[in-house]
View 1 (cartoon, rainbow, N blue to C red):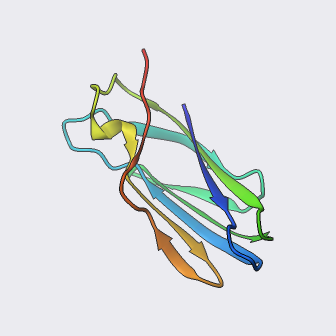
View 2: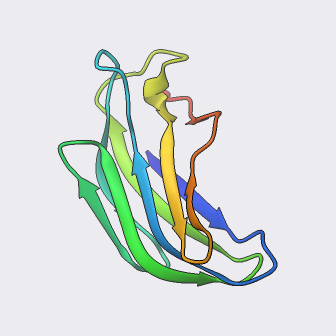
Length: 116
């Protein structure tokens, strides 16, 4: 499966995205999401932070008002996460924008339904 994080410049001035950090945290008893690859169509470098299931994208993507960029993270669940399990959720991420600073994730988490 592929998670896509889309950053949208909703402001009235241009901004530069310089880093995106994402972690796929899950309780020890839950099925883990194993990251296979990550990258952005807009360039930059995406690094897997092993043994943790985390990625850090770094680069310099300038976004005019209304423009977007994407970070795509592909991987697999080694087993079926139970319905309602936090293992199927992207709980914590951060986006760093040169002109603003670091923008942390908010509740609720971004969750998906994983089908066999």
